[in-house]
Amino acid sequence: MLILSVGDEEFFYDAFYTILCKPYAAERRLALAQEQIQVPQEVTSNMTLTNEFKYDVTGTWSSSNPEIISNIGLVNQTEKDVQVELALQLVCDGITKDLTFTVTVKKADLDGCEKY
Image (cartoon, rainbow, N blue to C red):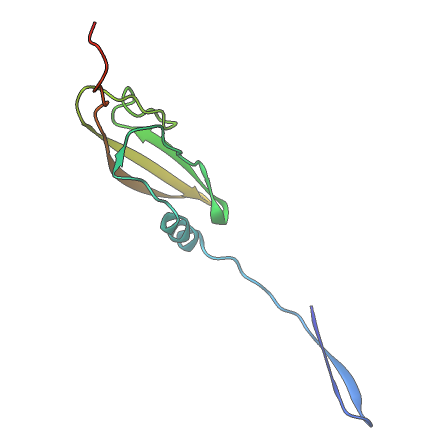
């Protein structure tokens, strides 16, 4: 409630106003959450794959190659570069939005290591 006091030396009154704040629709909250997501194109170490976002949006990650990048962001480098598709399903009030990101896991730097 907002109270507005108006008046001068002779006349004074308070006006009462009710302000109703409506939340964003689920589609808008999904779009706003999506704007905050940043996934690197190349990685050499573990990633942070967030499951909770602003605007009451949640997400579930899945990897096309969980041996290279797990569904929780653990990265396993190999002797060559490997491309992995990371899928993210965002959910807000029962509405879903699917996103896909291509990430290249760069090969392990084995310079200076002896082969066994």
